[in-house]
Length: 287
Image (cartoon, rainbow, N blue to C red):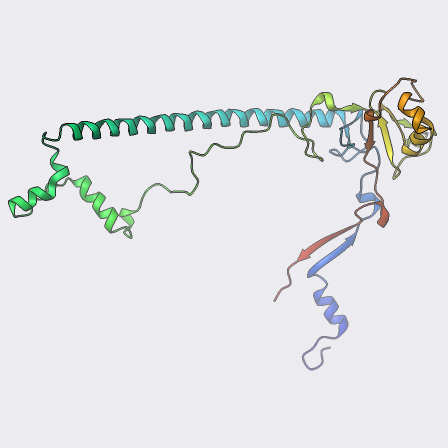
């Protein structure tokens, strides 16, 4: 019950709880687990990784690249048509300007030749000392549109825009971009991943067998082996001086370079140290 027209705290909270900025804490179920496809939001099948470290199912990312490539091809066709139309328009304008320059030169060079009556109409009227209406119907409509522009019949049928059609549009990208990083992506950039799983279908490190979730994880590009970064630093790198000479995969025994090591995007949980755990939504307050 209100007192002196004011709301008690419980009533005020009930009234304002559905307005303003609402903050909700995300749980583990609402975030991706390690090994989930970033497009299908489920465990990746035939997993691959992009150079940015995001994991996808091969079928999903290939379908995405195919659809984006087809869209880019359509954009290229539209771009070429636009360029050709602009070039043709510029060519026509140049021809008209050359024609006007030529006619102007001829009129100046042959100044004694009688010009068209429309060019010296005012001089004829003054000589005859009376007004002679020699304008056509089209000329009268043109004058009416210029002087009585507020009339509905005098409005232009075309809609004018401020956009200059002669400006060349920006060309479309040469290849599709990655869904998460936005960097150009090609099929040959995809890195296949070999996931080792336990009996509970959890992804484990290929070296130590530990479950991988929120830890830092890397993949060796040449061998497709996925392991914890701590295991890589301890077993593969070892001594800094010797690691520069011998970088050998502990599983396959193949040599690789440090640039072949890609950091994968780790999973997130509902803890504050794991990533974004809160989402905010603004609902306008009714006034």
